[in-house]
Amino acid sequence: MIHPSITTRFAPSPTGELHLGNARTALFNWLLAEHNGGRFLLRIEDSDAERSKPKFTKQIMEDLQWLGLSWDGEILAQSQRGAVYREALDKLERAGRVYPCYCTPLEIEVSRKLQLASGRPPRYAGTCRTLNDSERTAKLAEGRKPTLRFKVPDSGLIEFVDLVHGEQRFESADIGDFIVQRADGSAAFFFSNVLDDALSGVTTVLRGEDHLSNTSRQLLIATALELKVPTYGHLSLITAADGSPLSKRHGAKSLRELREQGYLPKALVNHLFRLGHSSDLHDLLDIQKLAVGFKPAHLVRSPARFDPVQLEVWQRQAVHALSSDEALAWMRPQLPDTLDSASAGAFASVFHQNLLLPSDAAYWVQVVFGEPPEHDAEGIKLIRCAGPAFFKAAAAAIRMHGTDWKAVTTAIREQTGRKGPELFKPLRQALTGRHDGPELARLLKIITAARAIARLERLSSAIA
Ligand code: GLU
Ligand code: ZN
Image (cartoon, rainbow, N blue to C red; front, side, top):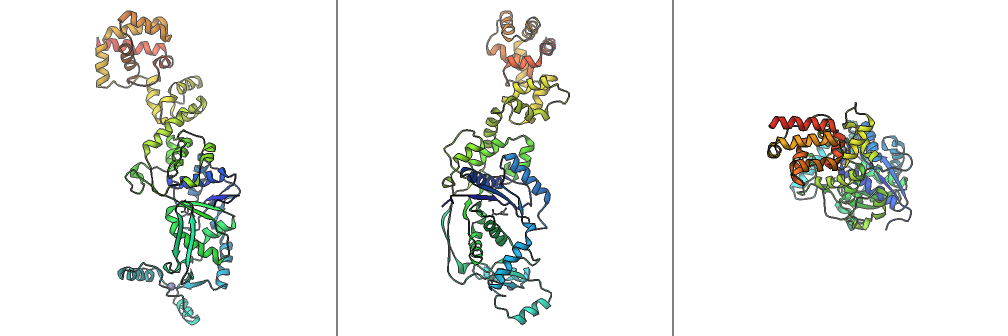
């Protein structure tokens, strides 16, 4: 079913920021092309001049590049292709496959309501299908601006095999004549979309399930124009954990927001790879490996549930997988500008494994280079329980042995009789204000002996 030489595409409408759903569509098309050594095209569906914004086109391109989805060849913008659509529409007009419709939106709405009220599925009633020339002239004289509608055959079946949903069958009689050219002269979605796919040699289209019912109309157009049609696969929707449509409320952010927060592209693509695509690959993989493992047969029909916690799991793994240089670059914006590169590098190497997002670095920057924030009630208890002598001994040990961790802890143990958690817990609390974090031995080195001694001594006298 998949063509030997495959061409896929992503065809976003630049009317907003990319969200997880669109990003997944782009990823799956890219993976499919990559898996088969084929081509992945980018087409901007910006024919709706009012809602399309160049800033969104730019952002979509940035998001795709950031995810690692490079496209082949020139980007096609539908707003530049009016002449191509015009020519194909003319062809349909000459063949008598389309006709002008003069109904106003209000008239269409009234007809829709009447049909619904009488229990019929609403569709275009065919009002203008049989107008003669003088009736048309009269409508025009009223100042009505016609759309063009496609004449859907009165009977027959439209059948196709969907890569995800299997065999599909639609009754032609259930489909009303639909608009292929809007009143402003621009080509409608159904039309430009299928025409562009054919003209660009697109062989396979993975797109959102919300387009499944459009496909029969698009196939009718393709047949009328004798175009080669792509194989379609309609991807299940992404929902929130409770099954409702995904929204901001569920922590669903746009790609730009996630990128700005410091989510890594690798975390995103690994997460998206498993949304609506069942896989036996459970490790964090780079995108090339994901392409090897991508199988259209593994696309699932049931809605895919987005779980922000799962994204965090991938993020944690992706952060772990960063090299020290990459980790430094990733968290650098959160580190003080005044920090020299050696200290910044040391900081990144110690904290790299402890952060989920760069913003988590802020606390540790404070701990290492400033004073640790206040101790909480539990921390205060721990400190009081260890007592002033313990911190005095710890300060003395560091004064004596610097940041030589083994020597420092041995000295504290000999002096106080505390060892293991009895020793580490209050020390960690005193130095960092927390009960968890990176290894103390490494931490002490970047906190520096001088700062550690000052902290311990101050604490010791504060509780004495
Ligand atoms: N512009 C359409 C959308 O973003 C494209 C649908 C398709 O991929 O065919 O929903
Ligand atoms: Zn009409």
